[in-house]
Length: 196
Image 1 (tube, rainbow, N blue to C red):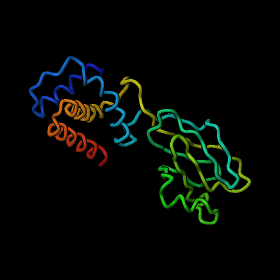
Image 2: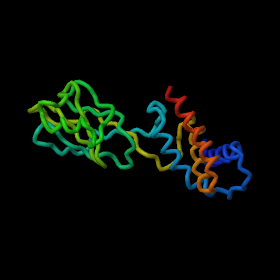
Image 3: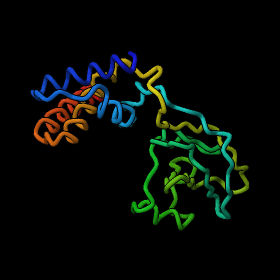
Image 4: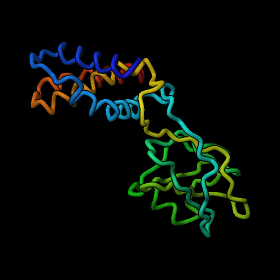
C-alpha cells in the first residue's frame, strides 16, 4: 500500500467515527503516519514485522564476572532474540534494570547460568549475564526490531491498525477526544485480534 493510499484509509477511518470537519490536504495526517506505523510495528506480533535486523557483529564490552554489554542498534524498538555462545538457550525478552531479577545478577551464585541466562536493557545498551568462566564472549544470535524511516514494504496486515491509530492521533490534535478514544479502541481491538 502506498503512502497516499494509507492517508486515504486514515481519512476514511476519521469519517467512520463521525467527524464532519474538513481535514487539510495531508496535514496533520502525514505528520503522524510514520509515528503510528512504528507504534503499530512495536505492538503487533513479531511474526508480522519486517523491520528486524541482525546486530551480532556489535562490539562487546566484557565484564570481569561472566557478564558483558553490547550497544543496541540505532532506532531500537524491542529485542527479538539474543544468545551468546556457551548458553543453552536464547533470551527472547530483556528485563529492565529496575526489576527484582537485576538484584540477583550481582551475585554469580544466584544467576540463571547458561540454562536460564538473563539480559537487561538500559537505554541503548544490552547487558548479559551468566557466561561460563573461561568462555570467549562471542554473540551467536542477536536480532532486534528497529523503527522504520519510510513506509516502503510496510506489512499489509498492519495497514488497518495503523490507519486507526493515525486517525486517533489526528483527532486528538483536532480536540475531538471522544472520537480519538473511539479510534484508539478500534486500533487496540485489531492488535488484540492479531495477537490471538
